[in-house]
Length: 364
Image (tube, rainbow, N blue to C red; front, side):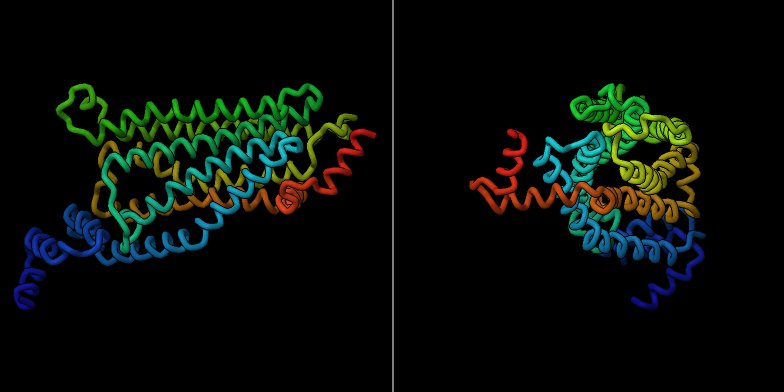
């Protein structure tokens, strides 16, 4: 058998080598099958490089699941619970960060299902069908749109609050309704891409779907709506904010203005979100431009492209724990809210002393 194997491996006919390797690796890991698929496209592909990239991706996925995933779940839940339990003291930025935390929890729901699949790790726990794949894709796209547009509207509302602090255009009440529209718009926006993805996975016998089997079109829609539009809007908002900060006006001492630390939190959140999400949307752009002509399917580039695509998605998942962690560290009011919530839980049904004193101060 070994002699036969070596004979086939050294056989100049690449198709014989591929057939033998397919038989030998029939029960091996999915990473082997992915590399086999690449090897079938072009015999010059670096087979060892494909396996090395697969191993690196598997290790990164496991590190994320062991470290980043539990941190993301804990901090997102903490951010939502603490703010919703102190609704009276919530500000406009708090509402947007709660909205992003809820979207982060949706990403936390998607992450383990994908990262434990055969596309990300050799030691996969399961393999899901097309229906599950499309469901995960919808949840991921909706979450990404909610996160990007919450960040964008936070920038614009911050400018409005700085320029017109007493108009209540960016009040907590209005912001809650805006966040509701963000979720509705994200679902509707994902529906157009959903048609392309669904039709790309079903039979070509359906005439209506056979004309829409174009994943590049779906990626182009997500690239334009999910990244290009928010990026332009954030740049415009930052230009307006910088213009206001250069102009010293009597309104700068207005007590109705937002806390100065919010500006640092806003700047950090926008930078972190775009740094973590830009690689993912760039892979969509590459697939839109190069995927249609078929350049990506070249055996030279396919392993590397698949590795970069998966790593970029890992970075996108990382936003689900980076944002609440940053909010926890940079928002100076969060600790006070958390302490009030803990005291309230400690008192349970009894009336807490600090609450009685607060009521007495309001009465007097």
